[in-house]
Amino acid sequence: MPQSGPAAAEVEELLAGLTPEVRALTLSVRKLVRSVLPRCQEIPDKGARVIGYGYGPGYRDMIATLILSRGGVKLGLARGSELPDPKQLLAGSGKVHRHIAFTELY
Image 1 (cartoon, rainbow, N blue to C red):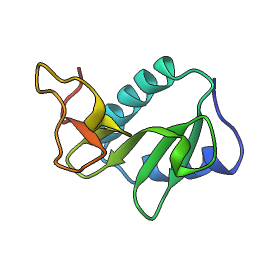
Image 2: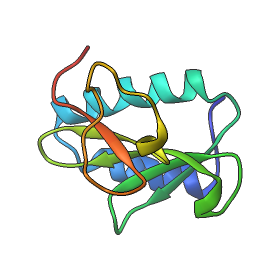
Image 3: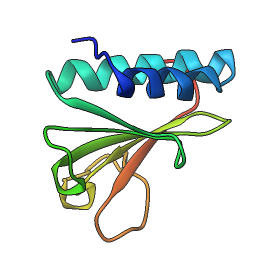
């Protein structure tokens, strides 16, 4: 479901600052997140270069994030440390969150 309004404009600003390769990668991962989390809110944070996804306005309602960088995008998973990870796909050493780094289109 496409988003409109100020949040959509902020997302576009974030995406506009990326290289074409990282932008394409980010759009691909974004499409995946939005297909898995229908009707979720997309909450951009331009200062942190992060796009959050959740079903409420607060951090405790956050399910996933896209962490943007020059070299790629990380799909952050809130409470990812609680997930089973038999194939060791999740990275990060925090007590709560984990992420998967994407550096090329899948």
